[in-house]
Length: 137
Image (tube, rainbow, N blue to C red; front, side, top):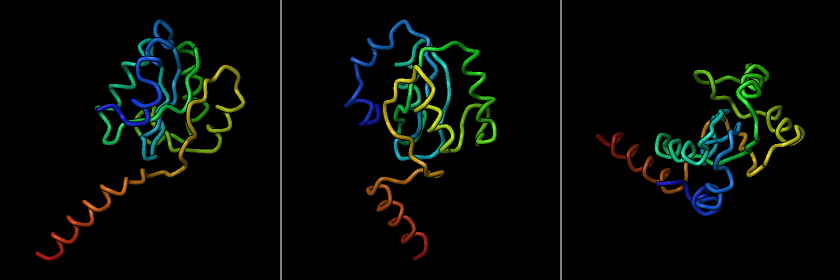
């Protein structure tokens, strides 16, 4: 299932907009949490892949036409915020400001500054039910 935000706002329009372009992108889980900086020549397919491989899907923060060297430079620049493996970063004001001031970025959504994702209300209720059941045993 493609994340609601992605499905509602981008779907096929986004697919045709990015088709044939190599882009550096910044995405984040729909409910916050870690930031992914990556590069792809099949951006639409990449976002769909993240949607199925992450618990809540992703929302697109920014996209820019760029080459692999630009992506490498971004990884070096934001290394101190590295959180997971090689391309996942903690949300931070430095990256948010960079995206707003560096020319060429297509800004699509605001970065959520929570380091941990905020669960949607229906999952919070389910979690609370599970906690009640396991503590009553």
